[in-house]
Image (cartoon, rainbow, N blue to C red):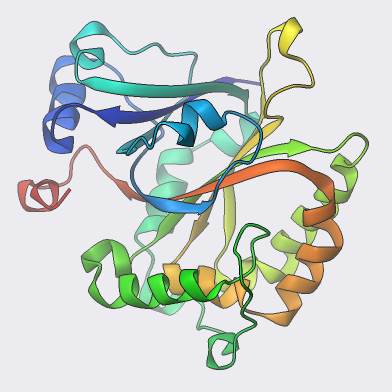
Length: 265
């Protein structure tokens, strides 16, 4: 099972400058490069000091197909960094660039229509259990209308997961339902999933898995969260199985994006 490296970066330079250096002055080629948009769920007990306690503004999420370290000509532009390594099944990485391109640049006819749950969504007071809170719904509505290309295009949700003892099988039932119906019918695709690689002394203390989930748009994500079919499965399998989790909403970019697209980062 290949080991991938997940790098979350807060930069001391503009994003286009960093990506220019990555492209032209290194041989590194990430599987995915994403601009961080916002937290959907905050961690409550794991990695809180590294991820949220210092009010860090995260800029980029990079996922590399190896145990990659950041070279000095890039690290000098990094103010803060959070990284994990995870074993990802080979079948998910096989032909990944083409599969990911097809997800990010679909034909209009292949994008699922919204199911209508947002006409009368289930709304809660908090999104910490992956419900659709009134605050999150208001932000999604605004972002989809005035967020430019990222607000109308695909989003990638980074999930960090820590399971309660003996509860991983319950989470797998949630994953099966996501793939079979509640996620897939809205274009949801868990395109990268991996088990976090720990030092022996870290066993049982940190994150257990990472997942990068694709949605055709932020509205498809909201359509899922605000639906009865999703929340029934979420509350039955996902919520009781997790001792901690966090979700970060990102928008993927490419090293070969043109200068006008780069200028908007």
